[in-house]
Image 1 (cartoon, helix red, strand yellow):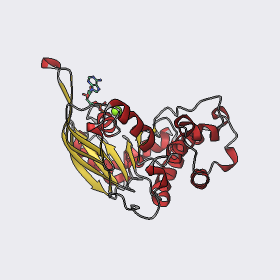
Image 2 (cartoon, rainbow, N blue to C red):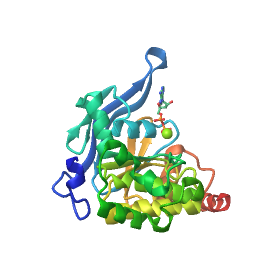
Image 3 (cartoon, helix red, strand yellow):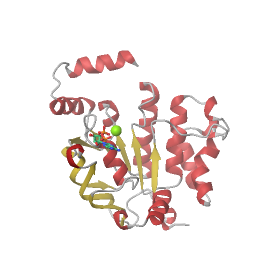
Image 4 (cartoon, rainbow, N blue to C red):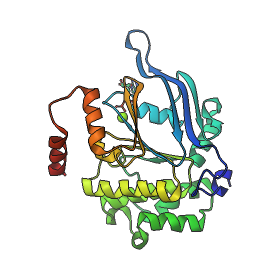
Length: 274
Ligand SMILES: Nc1ncnc2c1ncn2[C@@H]1O[C@H](COP(=O)(O)OP(=O)(O)O)[C@@H](O)[C@H]1O
Ligand SMILES: [Mg+2]
């Protein structure tokens, strides 16, 4: 058992640092010479524990790269990254794999559930693989919060898209990771199922003290977060607290230079397509 499991999460930092992840002067370049692309350019960021952070920015601005680097899924060209107190940029491959397994949760756009397992088995699968016993009370809390109580014996094919993604979120939460990363976690859902999953992510932060970082291009999704970071050309160009969908949308327009639609037109169109 890791220490991360024993530390109570709700109600403060539990004696741990107030920062769940930290990046210092993080640069990531692909290729070399003429084809060199700087995906991240000397990024400094602190992700506060128990906060819901959204990462936004135009396509190609470095959102996925930043998330993958923070999660220890991608190596850096230069710079340093910590998850909790551990500097992951110093770890050997095996140590990094173990840290990712024990302290990092992922929610992808495709739910990545195993079709032959029921909802509960999917939720506990990562812990089963790691040979860890799920904390029964915590598991009950997570299942309650997700609102899947009556559906635990159902297979993914017997669940709606929103319910499947809630299973994926519960799977990430069940292991009590230091931090959960989501890359467009509601990207494949209609707006109602998306709202269901976002509401659940919000509650897991408020009620369970979880730390979440989510990449999204949707101002409505971003408005569920406590903070929105904007990336452009591999740099953080803005940092907004307590976002609303309208404020996020206006900021997006400023950065994209697209003045073709008003916020009202955008939200009306969004409502109609879903
Ligand atoms: N494996 C890769 N090889 C080469 N270039 C890459 C690779 N991954 C990403 N890039 C480039 O890095 C930049 C940032 O990409 P990415 O982080 O995926 O942006 P975003 O998620 O914001 O759309 C883009 O210019 C992209 O083309
Ligand atoms: Mg991306």
